[in-house]
Length: 118
Image (cartoon, rainbow, N blue to C red):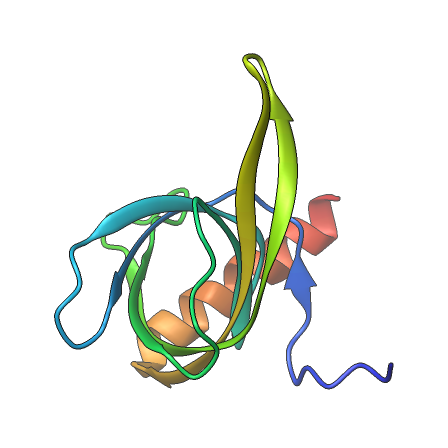
């Protein structure tokens, strides 16, 4: 399959809060990878492709989270092994559809810094 992303992603666990729109409750999760145009999230259960979510990424060294509206592109069940044994979970791929220029720049800078140091 040919890569379709417009932005590079950095494999990085970033604390993230998401809310499924229009009326979901805020949930906390981690990214598996993150870029200025989207992310792969680790969640307890899959989300439906096409769903819209409000995202708040907590970037190291930045006081305010980077906020965005994103669309779920894909979602799949995975099994993660933790200290307590296997636990079913999901990975969800999102694509940013609305983001303020300063938050987009912060995400792009985070990725660039991570790639330089990695």
